[in-house]
Length: 255
Ligand SMILES: Nc1ncnc2c1ncn2[C@@H]1O[C@H](COP(=O)(O)OP(=O)(O)OP(=O)(O)O)[C@@H](O)[C@H]1O
Ligand SMILES: [Mg+2]
Image (cartoon, rainbow, N blue to C red; front, side, top):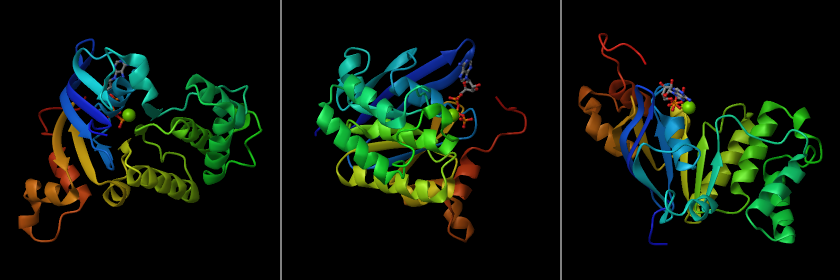
């Protein structure tokens, strides 16, 4: 695929007076997991929702595997899977029914959909709960159903907003393995997280957002070099780089 899974150019999104995302450009390349980092309120969820077609940008272009979200929204949305920060599920369906429903929305053949749903349910340790109503599912189980729904149609781009929230260690490992496999298969993954040690191990590159603007982008090596922290002695961790780049000046106040 010549077009990258995601290309964002000059994305701006305001809420009234507040500019939550301010001229952001970024790219998720085929075969990579891009970590999307930033303090609370930096604009990560706003960016991800805009890229998922759930929020209209005030300015900028979003291309999903070459398809313009503005010009060809249905085609663009079919090329992505999105795991929002709060799962949106139908309470009166079981996990398996929900996946059947999502597969039908994406136009998957019923047999292929059932086989893929079964494989994802097994990978995410949901087989036992697969036929219970979602309303009785725990937070982590819902999160896993939401992940399965996003991966069901095997899209070139998967975006996840803090997907490890609420997952137990085994589920977190299963998710990380699934994302790594997608990248190894040539897909692109964009994942927001506050877990910097996880990002350090899982992501090929990271983008750090601060007050709606990109303050750093690159591999950990590149970020270390750019931060200038390395010169001070011990090797900088991603946490060191993050805290340095997102430090609030006392006079600026929060947002
Ligand atoms: N629906 C909304 N209406 C008004 N302001 C909003 C809305 N959604 C988000 N904001 C504001 O936009 C800014 C960015 O919020 P966003 O949720 O994108 O940040 P985030 O980086 O995802 O933060 P967190 O790490 O806490 O999830 C914040 O100042 C937030 O208060
Ligand atoms: Mg958020």
